[in-house]
Length: 101
Image (cartoon, rainbow, N blue to C red; front, side, top):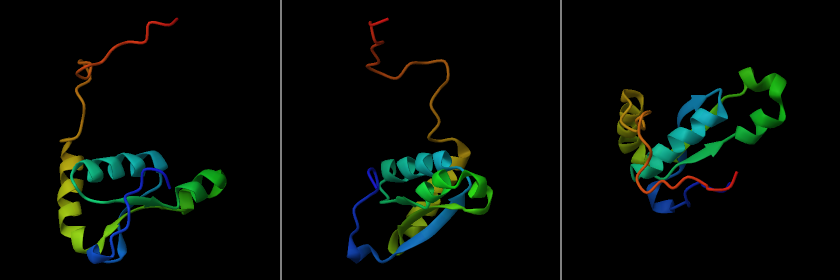
C-alpha cells in the first residue's frame, strides 16, 4: 500500500506491534513510526473499510520488522505521551493559505 515502508529482509519478518479498530489511528501511528526512523506498515485497513458492519471485530494491525520492535515500542510510548502532537493554536512553519475561494 502507498505509504508503507519498503521491506528489508535484514530487519527480520514483519511483526504486529499494535492493533486498532480505527484505520485512521493506525495510519497516524505508522507516520509517527516512520518519522521516528522505524519502517512500518498498516495491514487489514481495507478489510475494515470494505466490511463496515464487521469493523468492531476486525483489528487493523500496525506492523514493524521484528529486529526493530524495541525501537518501535519507544516510538509508541512517545506517541501516547503526545510527543508527536501539533500545537492547536499555531500554524505549521511555511504554511500559506490557499487564496482561491
